[in-house]
Length: 291
Image (cartoon, rainbow, N blue to C red; front, side, top):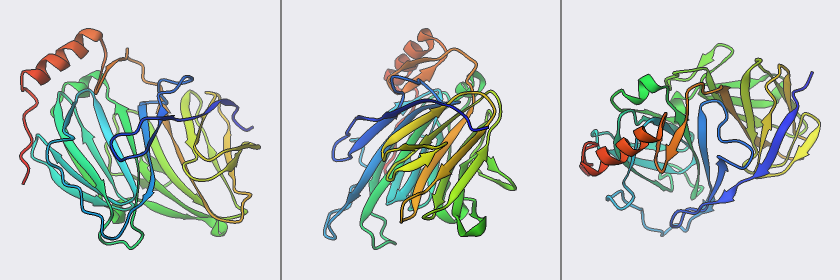
């Protein structure tokens, strides 16, 4: 049996500077999908070859507590600096994961990938809500380059699947899990189908960043996020177009603890959110040393 659709919607524009962004989550239908409480889609931008490289210099520095941020870069180079001394560049096809834990300040910019000729920037940023225990732990950072992302070809030349978070069959991502969670990038060739067996009680969503697709016999449009009911069933994705398409499927077990969000902080109570702000303004998250 195919899973029922519980909602579908387009994102809301939430541009940041020159980045054109659609905010997909939270939306009017869902505050979270599994542990994922936030999804921004940085729309693809074609840059001129003589465009200057943006530098991290503090102007975009901001704090987090209580979540892990996950940036998945389809095209471009993400330059990361944080107040715990991590500095890294992650290029097209890679991801960077940062556990904010009990508080961190980070700064990141997205540039054209110097190792690519496409002159594109295109990325996603997710926030993953941490259990209370991990909210109190020290921050961590993990860069995952494209060559380190598990990938598997689909049978019958249907395309491929990348495992950004979680596991699929015999493959598992290096990104830590504190609950059942998954994030897949599926590339489906023209005229092909792909199905995912789901688990009862888990929350699932699909996002169509650039293409239309037929999902459980209903056609959805480019830019839509689609949520599913919690019953067991199949998610079937069909590509009826004449070109390959890309789909993001993500979710996990429902976050069971209370959620209190305020700005860049996601905690369990409003008192904890207030404490997060107080600690930030008191300088307890440290400062970034730009090298």
